[in-house]
Length: 100
Image 1: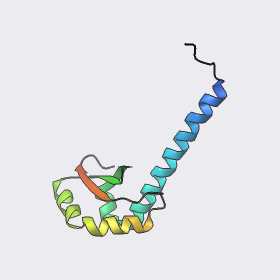
Image 2: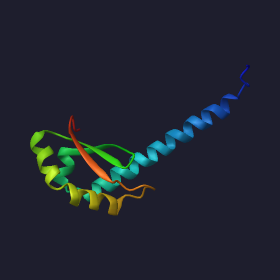
Image 3: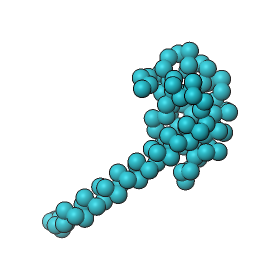
């Protein structure tokens, strides 16, 4: 079975559209996080993804992991109050990782 030839413009247009949607979602997540978290928290934690209603946040170390876990419900509410995406976060998962 032969595949039908497609014009490069159509292929690139689809790729760019998906990239723009991803960038838009990333910006909305970052903006909501900045509004929800205080300055000290933003220095020690950053959101990295949101998929299937789960917001994944990297934290600097286990101390910050514990601190963020204690404030999980409040952070989730604050994040959702400011998030402009279609689907709100149902859960936040904190992971120790590099925060820059």
